[in-house]
Length: 371
Length: 182
Image (cartoon, rainbow over all chains, first blue to last red; front, side, top):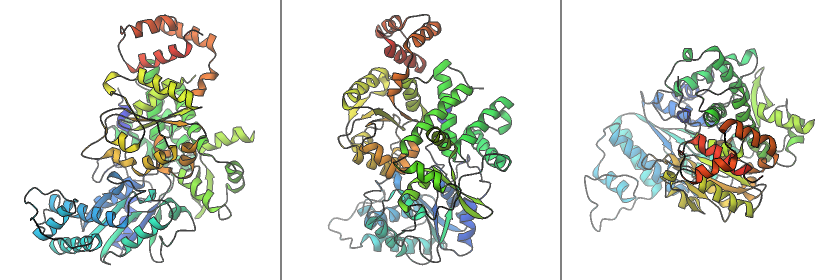
């Protein structure tokens, strides 16, 4: 059996409706959808890099399409998030809603709205030409509101905006302005938004998380020991479905190697896929072998360890050593945000309480230093 | 033993149209490494040197060797624009290979601010200083056992363009380059 290692594509989240989606053992898309359907109109999503936030909110958008006009908006696919301002975000949101309304929901948007969207260069529509001399006075904020109002009226459904990419917005005025703009949208719009790292993990959230809003943290899966069996099974299933195959296609030897990768990943799906893809590529480059052996996995693990090692800053080693096993409340906020966002420290629930654990790949690096 | 360029080729191979990073100890070695990568990658990749993310994104069908004037700016731009590589209308088919100085501004930006990019490239960043860890005598013997040729003999065939440009041959060629004349 040959394996297409590139098909694993660790850097690619799944889009809405992708058949390769695998349900997490806990948390994720279903939690988001349950909360929205229960009337919680704003859900903020956080979690370390590579944990699957984009995939989960894309799945949430799919699930919400039964009873809402669910608009999935990966803003980072169109814009440099570090330069995105509130007006540009509003225009992009208006354009995506308009596009979806026409192409997916087949709604007959008014000519004036289509003209305004085309005028602002956020909708492609070849069915008419902009009228010469015509003035389109709507501000970006007003345009997004009128787009939402018209689509809701035509669809007779609530709109859910599922917005990805804002985790890359740096702390400060830009983040505050963007979230103020989102909150200025009509109350009958559901918002599901991936929030910036500093808001997800830091106490200084600059008003990004407000009272009454639900913050859903997508956590690393347990992958070690007996409690980690379901996490390992999930990751094995992710691997199989990315190849369009079944877990039963893997023999015992392959399952052992997959379990190794799962344990080293710390329960972060992207790291797991990177380890498998790297090991598979090593096997191919070494001897055009279709499946990696343990040495290939050792090499892939070594690459990941070096990457983690480069992320450690002065003082991190002592801080990690001091605060592992605690809830992290005494950890300096900036350091805590950075270490949790990178997944160097993983926040897990133990007896319903958050506890910071060291990523297995980092544990190995630190053990060298502590030795 | 891991070979630095085998790791780099693996990094380039891993994600179609992804990002790989080469860590360079200093500017002099950076220039040498850029040249080495240019000589190793398939002709079809049409590698081209660029210095900004904007330039790299503008050529999705060519391998962009990104040699930044400002490391921090490029790392932050790449972090903020990362998913533009997945643009539906212009999906990237060739990777971006980013050359950064070890312990420089780019590395600090990756650790402190560019969380998404750091996650994306994890395992796909290669530090050629590992080269210094090579046991030359043992590696030459191992190379000859595996290929039946000395590194120099292997390279003469490669340079005469008499060898298929497969990933495996590229990896062996790089190993031969590391061992050449040693």
